Amino acid sequence: MIAVAGAALWLGGWWFDAFVIAVSAVCLAEFLRLVWRGAKSSAWRAAGSAFALLYVGLAAITLMALPVAVVLGVVAVVIATDTGAYFSGRSIGGPKIAPRISPSKTWAGLFGGMVAAGLVSFGFFYSNVGEGAFSVMGAVALVIGAGLAVLAQAGDFFESWLKRRAHMKDSSDLIPGHGGIFDRADGILPVAITAGLLWTQVHL
Image (cartoon, rainbow, N blue to C red; front, top):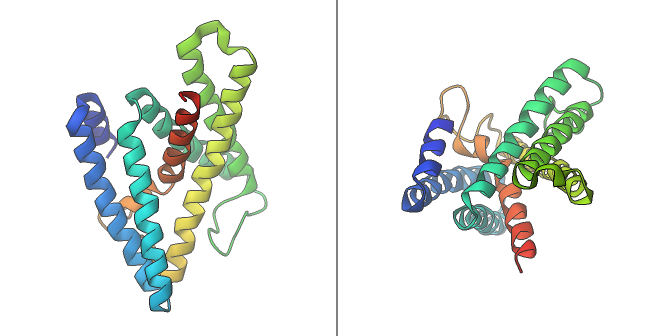
């Protein structure tokens, strides 16, 4: 998936748009499947379906509208969050955040993910401004990265909650050994939407 996404980003234009649309369509279908399996009434199914369409659709539109460098930043922050959370969670352990929803997630893992994502965000900022990154704005970039890590983890928890409601281990078995597209994109969705909002505010 990383290779295909990288190729789509490198080609840009309608290639990248087509990739985002295709991935989003599958992600939405998996999201809707979880909603329909987990919801107990038609009203909740309708509400969940509407939210799924808004959530995935807004993230897709945002990714297609953002500059390539920002999209790379979004992906890098999410990967850093997952990597930092995995290694710090495994090495430190400690109390769980929400064991009933996601038994493997710890507070130490969240902190490690925040540190890793903050450093990646600062690295992107430094690559654009050089020594000027060691300033108040550099600190802001660090904090933004850490905050996006929290959102990425929240997206992961949200999907885990949906899967528990639907009594499913993965959103699908599309990717052998890794579940479905929604399982891979759960952290990217809220981060992309928030990054789009931040980008819009900066360029108003």
